[in-house]
Each structure stands twice: as structure tokens, then as C-alpha cells.
Image (cartoon, rainbow, N blue to C red; front, side, top):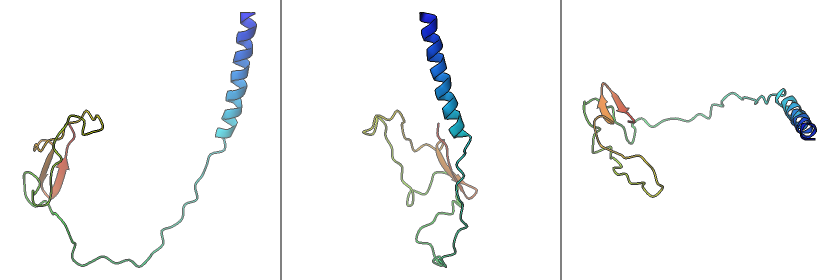
Amino acid sequence: MKLYFITIVFTLISIVLGSCSKKQDQAYVPVLEAPVDKNWSFETAPSWFDEFNYTGTPDTSKWTYDLGGSGWGNNELEYYTNSLNNASAGNGVLTITAR
């Protein structure tokens, strides 16, 4: 009786999986459209920028840190720092490293 039941269960599973696999053969192919030129223009002077043409910590007049830990209200396990090991500027690049 147990063998008969197991055979029926495996047969039903193979039927279900077989019917699912037929649906996977028909892959969805999205229709891609070329971008449209909307004649947008940019301002000649940006309202905010940082060229990172200095070495060391990010410019504190432009950048701030969210320092803290202890979950920040959503039980995060992360802790935020202002260490050079995590954020530093140099060679025209801001480098942010998660540790």
C-alpha cells in the first residue's frame, strides 16, 4: 500500500513539473525601444559639485557622515564610522569602502 501511494505521489509530481517546464520553454522577450531625444540641456554651471582634488577625508563643507549603530530603528547590525578606512578622497575620486 505504501509503495502504491509513493508511486502515485511521484507520478503526480512528475506531471506537475512536466507541465511547468513547458511554460519555461516560452521565454519572455521584452520589446526594447531606442531612447528619444527630448532636446534637454544642462546648466552651464552646476549647483553643487566636488572634484575630489584633495587627499584625505571628504570635504566636511560638502559631505557629512551618518554616524552611529545600535540598529538605527530597524535593527541593523551595521555601525557607521567617519574613518579614512571607509571614506577617503584622492586622485579625483571619492573611495567608499564597506568593511
